[in-house]
Length: 297
Image 1 (cartoon, one colour):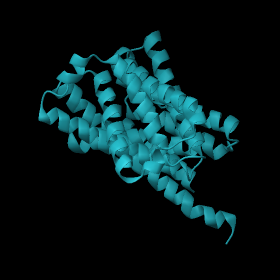
Image 2 (cartoon, helix red, strand yellow):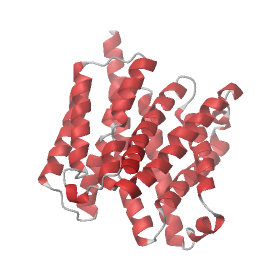
Image 3 (tube, one colour):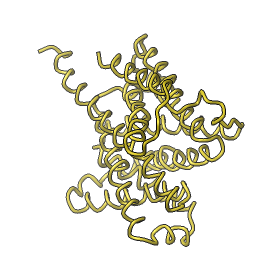
């Protein structure tokens, strides 16, 4: 069996895992809509609970089942501290403020510049090949995401310098989250990587919340249930699937495949919330799916 034949099943597994991650991340919009719209929680409070509860659940699971996965080389602590600070805490914070300042459409489009950052950084750091097919797929995903979130409708686009800068920063920090993961996976399991990254990130996010704000978010069993479900499904489930997929795919490819998330989120909003999809949004979805199919050939 040739090296290419041996690598094919691993690549297929990697694509499946990353597509699974995009599918679970797509449910985040539903959780944000319920927790922010129905219960009135601030977006920054929601993401703090998202990271913090996911960390606590993961810590308990590993403490009961695989304590060896909690051990790391103490010399790697500065790396994980930077990972949690930039790839988790900063990303969550700047994206929340980007939505407030620039609107969801602009923030989402510029956040999905992350694959471009990842392709460039992976080329420089990991010597990943940048060929014509990857560039075409990247352009398709960027354009497709723009159409999916409706950024073509200027009536729904709020442009201001601070919002644009924060939106671009969210794309960069999301890209760095992928790069940090790729580097850490050379030495540690996905579970180890996630527990330290999200643990440090959630600890930093706590400084953005007052005790009263945190307590008010736990006022009813229904709110607690939604927060726990968000921590388990899109946060733990999505991140573990994505990090596992990164073990089998180049970081640049994985970041492009992950842009299936807004496609699935739009489909979910149509099926569950009854939101209508415009023709250009459908075209954008087809472009993103086409980009992923181009990469998997």
